[in-house]
Image 1 (cartoon, helix red, strand yellow):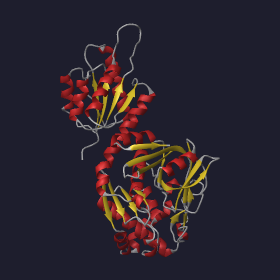
Image 2: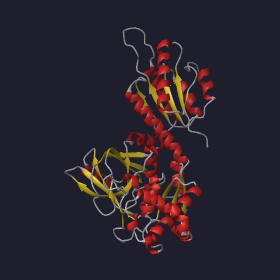
Image 3: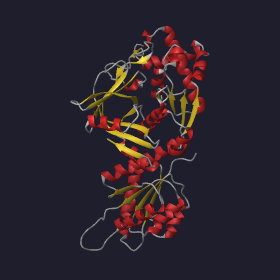
Image 4: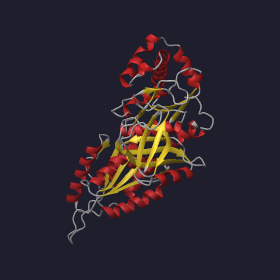
Length: 446
């Protein structure tokens, strides 16, 4: 598949103040260069339809930055739209001088013409930013839009594997391959959990030694787990890792209970923790949309995300606690405890992860969900991960919400959101909002 490409398309006409336009053109290129190495630039401003069509002949963009370098009528935007069906951001330049004299650029009028054509030409949202190349807000919006477009393309290259079926009553995480392919471009594959269990049973201790050693470096007190469970954990870790490499998998949603307790005798929790640390977004309880949410969070931040249930609300602290049995990535553990190992809170079999998560000034709580009619929607909440110890047996993270936590809980429950969420280490709400626009998905921001 071709590399991700962003096309900067500065359109205008030669009857305005070209010296001012040239300055904006050069500064725009500098700004875009500072944001991404994937941007393609024309050699000059595109001030005629001939210049525009010549440049368009040379590109194959995944995202377009359409800028009115001066006024340009709707024919310029229409030419771009008829050639490329990809997301775009429309960029209006601020008028550089207001002195009672000549109108230098008239970029804003051009933006209205372009936007009118965009909305008339095709359905769907487009992004918009107003300002000069030296304004921080412009850089922030352009950066977020390019990252969102890159995320959209990355999704089309993702193979997500569902390992086993969702447990009874957990159908909210179940997905159809055609739905994921149509909406996100994601390829969904499915296998039975027993396939990996059988594969794990066939490995010798020697074949799995490296996997056990890797876990020992990241986990604290793994040696306290009974030897059989440690060995079986390593076998399962190798089985998952081998399958992922062989099939070029980028995310998994794995069955956990009861199969791995009853049919294998060792939980899969710690295996998922290790995979999350190694760059594979891994959810449990076969929550496909949970894994997809984690993958998006990981790609936008280049670090693991926390996956869990909202289990506790504290109105005084304005916090929501997210928790799960023990499959959080080791790197998310608090520094004072490390990634401690324990046993499953219900089944009393290990290894599982036992820790509170490290604090973070900015986190994003996110969920790819579906409403009662099956239509996709995104849950988004901004907050702060507080410096809190483990709240319950398993792994937990306490998030102080930016808005009223109780209202968020009450509203999201009444809206029927699913009980699994990804807590992303970093503020990526804007990128996810833009991704939703590009995918034509509703955003529910709390």
